[in-house]
Image 1 (tube, rainbow, N blue to C red):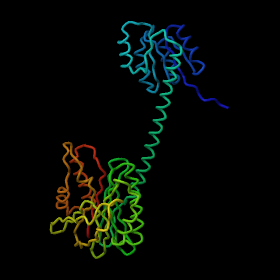
Image 2 (cartoon, one colour; image 1 turned 135 degrees about the horizontal axis):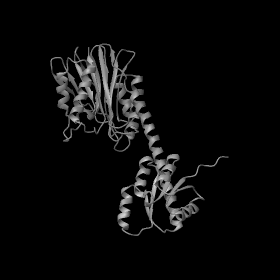
Image 3 (tube, helix red, strand yellow; image 1 turned 135 degrees about the vertical axis):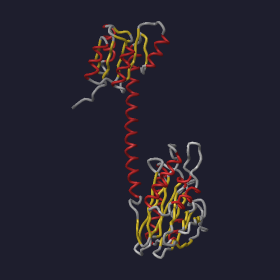
Image 4 (cartoon, rainbow, N blue to C red; image 1 turned 120 degrees about the vertical axis):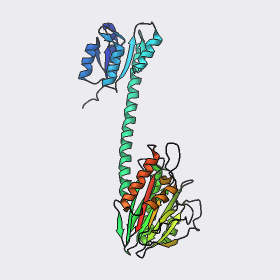
Length: 377
């Protein structure tokens, strides 16, 4: 049966007695290698990895401070404990040791128990650090998988069906977001659209986002009409706890150009008509939450003419801040619609996001941003 590899300790001191003492004290627990100077120590360091290096400050062929710097430069995971037998200028020696990145500083002679305890603590902290780094790597890998999965749930391409063209963009501010949107064609040739925003962002928001999407998807599969979806949805959101809530725009696009929709506390969609007029499709009810009644939410209907466009978005778009803290604002979204009526849908979306990025001027976004552009062809 193989034995676990023992931690390796390097003792660098030009005093043979000191090297022998350190070896006797530590050899029962660790693999101890000794060196009488900088040259020998660098040779040992080039041949194997050491977990801890005990280094005397004054060596015949150099100084321990420089050696400490070299060790940490080539092997950052090695901890260096500096030692000295000189009691002159103790504060200066301690300060220099800290500057060079030493783990600790010892004055000789020292108690053997102190040496054992110090090396043991040093190795324990290394083990804890490795465990944290491993956990962080695994967490990052899991978040990346979750991010890829969440992205895969979003529409991967534009939808062109029954005289409608739909395309959207989703940009989370963290690895995971609390927004989602979908564009789905039903067997009756109608198209259902949804844009939702769960409060917050990150892992918790993504979890609630997934549950809301699941409830909404189950309801629209049974019947896509907003009047049928709404009561099923409001009865199925009991998973929202306390202050958790979401806003949602849900609509059904019909082949004759009509849009039936409800808006539960979501930012009003912007309707651009070919005559240049921009109209807000106001909210029709309260936000989705388990603590507020939903009976007052209405289903409304509008009819889009050929060439008309509808922009549905989350507040992360118009609340994006520039370095001075000024929002992008909804007025700029309406102005963009007015200016981009002749620009192809896909290109128009890219231009809009570029305007938002230019507004932020390098400032990190604070919220998830989702936008969906619908055109009646």
